[in-house]
Amino acid sequence: MKEHAHSPAQALFRRLFVINALVFAAGTLVLALSPATVSSPVLLAEIPVLAIGLALILAANALLVRASLAPLTALTSLMQRVDLLHNRDRLREDGNGDLASVVTTFNQMLDRLEEERASASAHALAAQEAERGRIARELHDEIGQSLTVALLGLKRTRDRAPAELTAELEHTQEAIRASLDEVRQVARRLRPGVLEDLGLHSALTALATDLSQTGSVHVTRSLASVPPLAADVELVLYRIAQESLTNVARHSGATTAALTLAVVEDGEVVLRVTDDGRGGVREHGAGIRGMHERALLIGARLGIHSPPGGGTRITLTVPGTAKEPTA
Ligand SMILES: Nc1ncnc2c1ncn2[C@@H]1O[C@H](COP(=O)(O)OP(=O)(O)OP(=O)(O)O)[C@@H](O)[C@H]1O
Ligand SMILES: [Mg+2]
Image (cartoon, rainbow, N blue to C red; front, side, top):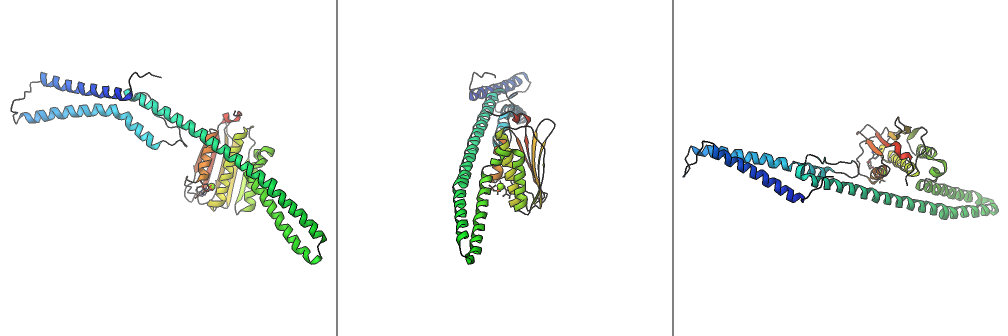
C-alpha cells in the first residue's frame, strides 16, 4: 500500500493551492504577454476582454478543482448505497490522486464493518440456535414427559372405570395424545435433530412432507445427492428451506411449491424453493433478513425472484469451498 506522508486534508489543501496558483500564474502570464492593455480608469472597450479573461480563468479553475474532488462524489454515493448485508461494494483506489488515502481508509472501514457485522450475526444466530435447542429439549423432556405420565395414568383409570365413562376417557386420551404429537412436532421444528441423526436429505424431505400434510400447498421435491457438507452449511440450508416453505404457506396463496437441491458443474450446491403464488416479496421481514444473514455466514448467495403475480423463487447458492469443515 502507498504511504501518505501528509493527512488527506493537507494533501487536498496543497493540491487546491497548486491548482489555483497555476491558474493565476497562467492568467498573469497571458496578461503580460498579450497585446491587451488595461487603462485606468478602465475603458468601455476593455470590459468585454476583461470579462472573457476572468471567465476563462474561472472555468479553468472550476474544471481542475472539480476533477480533484471527483472521488469525493463517488465516495458520497458509495456511502449512500453501501449495504453490508448484500454486496461487497468498494471504491477503486487508483487514480484518485491525493484522495487515495481517504478512499483506502473508507474501504478499510467497510472491511472492518463487514467483518464485525458477520461475527455479530454469527453470534446472534448461534445464540438463537442454542436457545431453540434449549426450548426444544424442555418441551420434549418436561412437557412431553408430563403428558406421557398423564396419558399412562389415564389409561390405568380407563381400565378400571365403569363402562359409561370409557368413551369420555378415551376422548381425553386422544386429546392428550394429539397434544403430545404437537409438542414433539414443535420440538422437532425448533431443533432439527433429524438433521443430525438422518442428514440433510431426510430433514428436507420432512419439511416438504410436513407442509404438504398440514397446508393446502402441495410440495414436490427433487433432492439430488450432494457431497458431504459442513454441519453449519447444512443447518443454513435447512433453516433457509424451512423459512422459505413457511413463507409459502403463510403468504403466497400458492397451490404448489417445489423444493430442489442440486449440484451444478463447479461443485456449487443450489437450494431452490419455488411457488406459484402471488409473488411480490418485499425484502423487509425478519424472516428474509435472517435468510440473508445465514447465507452471508457461509459465504453463500441468496437470490429472491418474486415478480408480483408471478410466484416466488428463492435460490441459495453455496460455493463449492463450503465443503471444507469450518473451524
Ligand atoms: N412466498 C411468498 N409469496 C408471497 N409473498 C411472500 C412470500 N414470502 C414472503 N412474502 C412477503 O414478504 C414479507 C416478508 O417475509 P419475511 O419472511 O421476511 O417476514 P414474515 O414471514 O412476514 O415474518 P417472519 O418470517 O419474521 O415470521 C412477508 O410478510 C410477505 O408479505
Ligand atoms: Mg417469514
